[in-house]
Length: 232
Image (cartoon, rainbow, N blue to C red; front, side, top):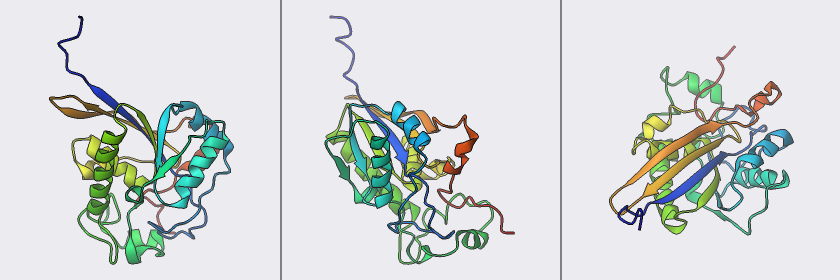
């Protein structure tokens, strides 16, 4: 039989969606603070709903902004799934006592050119390092790759979480993942290939924004890390 000598390859497709913009943070770092998001731009959610696969299993973090974002996608006409599993390990980095600090002032106090709030191994006081976030994200991805092997997975999460997933797909290089922009409500697709001999990742798209042709929706860009306008 043709192809009988080829190894069986299982492809699991991850569709990551970053949560909608947070408007009521007062310009402060919010990290794992359970803060609401703005889902009023229906044009954006209609566009995203058109690119996501209907036959998928859904996951989110435990924070309300990811649940609100999922609800907005379903309200845009996407078939509501029977369930959505909430994973605390897909939450944003716990930035400890940095949460509530003015974002621009904090970043101005850090070394110029930093790609995140701190070095990936430096924990926030009373919180986590980016490597802590990366390791829990990786463990969760590996578990779900086993649980939902061969399926489409839609995961509504956070800028830091998705950057960690990109770093994993780049060959277990967390710092490389920090080099990517992850805009609000953007879609990032990472495909996991598993065979008896090896596993690998491909990155079909990162930070895709189906609404991008219309500048009226530019407010979907918010920082997912230290990128901020200069202080006046």
